[in-house]
Length: 292
Length: 315
Image 1 (cartoon, helix red, strand yellow):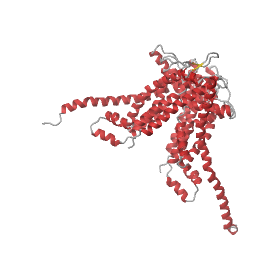
Image 2: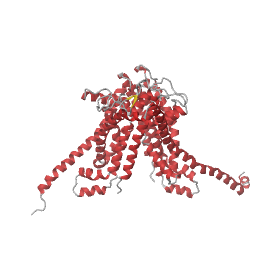
Image 3: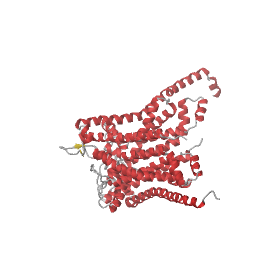
Image 4: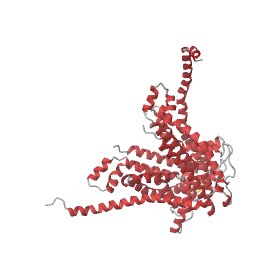
């Protein structure tokens, strides 16, 4: 007598196996669906915007006539914004990371700072806008200036830089520090000459990613009251300015189709900037990443 | 020359110089920790600044509008001089509608992608798909807003003729797409950290791959998965530009999804763009709304942290 009834085994396995193969295709199809949407999004924007994208578009100030309008003011504004956000957020972010990884004792204050940073990362960007409006625009009377926008954005991206820098500093092996101490270096000398150089690729990668978030954010700047439409360029840190996402927002909000095409062209400029920055980040990560 | 130099060489001088240099270095050595601590304090000050700003300005708002009206009135109608009404419920309703739609879109797709990537995909497929998901997560929200208004809404209007130009459906779906990569990649992290021995054990007992994924891996990674969903929803609540562009500016308490709505974030944007004078009730109202928004997202984030800590299974 056979102990296993082959037929009944097959009969019982069949629905399970078909469920298995069907579900596999469902999971695959849904994943592809996400990728497909990215494709559609890019295709739509490029097919809509490429017609308007030329040198004149990059060199013109915004205008009420779609055919004369351009992103020059917004592009320059975005560069100004980066010029403020980069030093401020890197100094504060890397400083915090060094403190937490190299100096901080394991006590309640340190713990509080860490919990605080992870919660800060989850605060909606528009709330940072309210903070910037109260502190920088009103209390410090900076107005809707490059500086006010830059400082607000620096605070917004700070958690990203801190976490990336912390990881980079933590990845530096302790032997390096010990060797440095062993040769008579002080703690600060070790940090500046040994730890930071070893951690710099990770810090830069995180910094570039944070910066690309800063130039794509719109909501906080709208709350600050930054102009959506500006026909002159900032000359000092205290001048008003507009940036690419605001210009895109302005064009998107208009009913005419021509302005939507302009918005698409502006989006292409923004996306190209982001792609370039992200490629640099990947390049740094691949080229300078040392394995200890 | 050389001999002269060695002649003037004095050990005592050298020691003195070294001491001088050392004390100079000693100062840097001593003050650096404090300077670094100050930079670390900035992030704490930011939080304190956010909380204090919101609280103070919200109190000023409650001088003009009673707390009871804020939480129970059924109308948000701030721009009227004579009979304005500040009941936040319609704005919360708008946020809720968009968030629920986003979750309905993002949770199944995000989880399916996570399961596919961690259980089925070959290494090569994973290496291609994961960066693309990262690209999707890095696209600025204003771009999604543009996409919602100029692409998703027209398509939906073909399907549902009664759909208004500004509605809850289109921004909800697009926010869902926006948070899908986040849910997918965080859930995938949680699922890949489930040890292979568990999968192999289940497979050896005759389970199919699907059964392993659903009955073994999913329950084992559930804390990470739920946390990723909660974080995704928190992002959806705080999302601004998509709803500001495609959601409209008509706060209402109705349940329909085809009409124009206004979320908490979109209201703040609307007021910031207009010229509500500094010190008016409307000006302070954005802080009260911001405070409500802040509390919502903070609760969600704390919940996510609690879930990861409390229900984490250690292997």
